[in-house]
Image 1 (cartoon, rainbow, N blue to C red):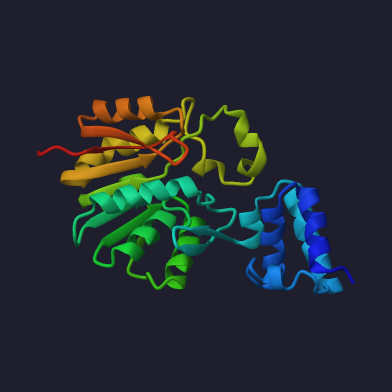
Image 2 (cartoon, rainbow, N blue to C red):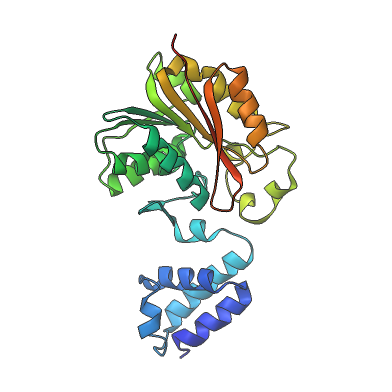
Length: 274
């Protein structure tokens, strides 16, 4: 019987990643990673060893850890994820921070392209007085988002199937937020790494990656209250282009915020009085 220390070392060498090996074994055993410190010398039974080996094989073939385990941590929540949803990434937490900084008491938020519900649920968790609406074109993604809302006791978040603004009619919001597709359709990275497994519709957006950013920006003024904010995530090299889109739509106070690695990550602007 192989002990935990040895099997983890072997898996870490195979994956060239100790953290991923620990996440996969923790998933198999139903424990947290801290458990390994106290149980490194414990033997691992044949069934657990076989199950772990299968997960390591899947990861070695490129399948994302989040899809293998079915979960990803975001903000202060563990969220269900799957092939129907984009995997929430740490840099998107900047988007949540910017929403919280601009949302008035009792404010209304619209999350466009909610996917797993990560942004909408993080905002709803932090601001219990807010009214949060989350839409997505994908019904399978919405099923995941609704389960995440139930898991975290946030059933008051309203979900709807929608092609961007289609389902919200003439409603107006204090903040519109989105992590839309923004990768160029010809980008070679779409065929590499984790991106190979994520839904293409949640990743690519036209030749320059800005098609959906343009669509969202063009409808913002009709769905924001006076002085309301539009906040959108984009690629590290799209800050200039995203600001230009916002300026062309006549929005005010256009800005770009950088992530923890000092890369352009979120651009936003404010609606003007009608």
